[in-house]
Structure formats: structure tokens, C-alpha cells
Length: 304
View 1 (cartoon, helix red, strand yellow):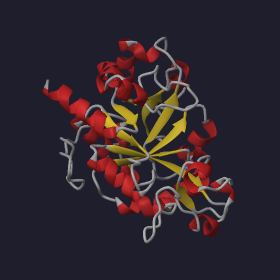
View 2 (tube, rainbow, N blue to C red):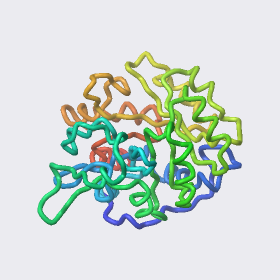
View 3 (cartoon, one colour):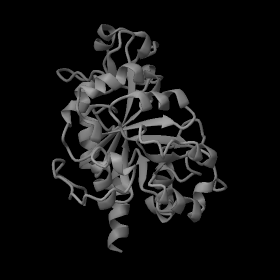
């Protein structure tokens, strides 16, 4: 049964599962959620359905009501450095304009609407990132912020003003060394999820550097020849206190993010066909656009 209360606080265990012990307080919520629910249900942009656009407060609420533990939000910026919850490149599809949102001023973005979801008396505009995040401050779930690392020189200071470090997880490709170094220099040690496709990328992470709060890795695999299908490799990641995260979104490029175990397979065949293999590997978090299906599969496996 999908949860109906989005304000219920998780049990506090005090155990440090992921990340270095020096960052235990910052990582407490993520660790509590992971200990209580594995794999974590990660909703990609919230639940986009009917009149509800992705990357909006309503989409986040719909995700939580669908059983999500984490909501992934995309980050964009105006030319005058106002941050928005939007995946640039989808302007034509979602907003009916042919300009990239990152070339617009905040005033111009303020005039845009999600043209398929807006209706008389109910305007659906692009939401400011800080407004969306602050709406859920103190709730027992985590936001994963994606497509933000090249904006960190300004964005990190903006996030500091929200006082939500324990509720935010920053995604970054493992090979973006300059961005990771910026986190090393920043006072607030936000939890970091590094995107990795190879063992060398994992080995190059500063997991023993207390100045960078690396808590996990998002594992990319185009087929089952990738090392993540080796239980010994996965066991080593756990010994290194790294949360393992898989993205099951189906890309229109046709490139599989985890060997074809994806959302389309969950619908075309069954949720079990898409995700049981992932769960059997001991993956800690699965990102999906179908959080309610993953939630029900997780619940069924717990009770079987």
C-alpha cells in the first residue's frame, strides 16, 4: 500500500552506514532512510501526470504519495543567476519555446508556462529551485540535485542559505575533478553522489578525504559485462561505505543506463523483470519515473 502521509518521520537509529563518520550528522537522514528501506525509491523529477509537470512542488508531493524516499530534481539557471527546477533542452516540449532557458533572464522565465499542463485559472510556471526545496524543508526525505555541478560557484552559497544540507544530495560525474575540488573548498560538506561507469572512476574518488563528503556512487552499465554485476565488487563498495544507486530511466537515445533493466521493461514485462535483478545485487537506491511500481515491488519482496 502506498504511503499516504508525507510528514511521517523515519525511525532514528544513529548508525552510520554511508559516508565518513566525521559527516555522520549531515548524512543521518540518508542513512536512516536507507536502513529502513532498501532499495530507496528515487523518483525522477517527481511524478509527472495529468496537469502536474515534472520538477514542481506538486510533482514532488505526488512522488512522496507514491512511495518515494528520494526525489531527483534538475537544476537550471537564468543568465542573471536565479536557479530553477528545470531540465534544459526540453523547452520546446514542455514550454513551447525554442530558446534554452539558460539564455533567458529571470523575468523572461517568469512569463513561461507548461503549455500542456496549464489551464484557465491554474497557471503552471517554471518553479524557482529555492522555493521548491524550502517547501519541503524538514520533511523526512532527500532531494538529489542533478545537472548542477558547473553552477556550484554560485549555487552552493544559495543552498547554504536554505540550511538543508542533510536533506540534499549533490550528483556529479566522477571525472569532474574541478567540481569535486570546489566541494573540498566549500565550508558546508554536502553529501555527494558520484556518477561512475568504471572501477577506475570509483577508485579515483576522494572517499578518504574528510573535506569531501562522498556518500555513494551512481553506477552506469550499458550491459552485464560491467563490474557492477559482480557481487564481490558490490560487497567492496559497501565496505567502502558507498551507497550504490542505479538509474532505471529509459532514455530516448536508446543508451541503457543499467543494462536494459529499466522503466520500459517494468511496464512491457513486469516490475520484477526490471528491478528484481537490481535488488538481488544489493543496490541501495533505484531511480525511476514509476516510483509506485518500484514501491509495490519492494513491499511485496519484503513480505514474501
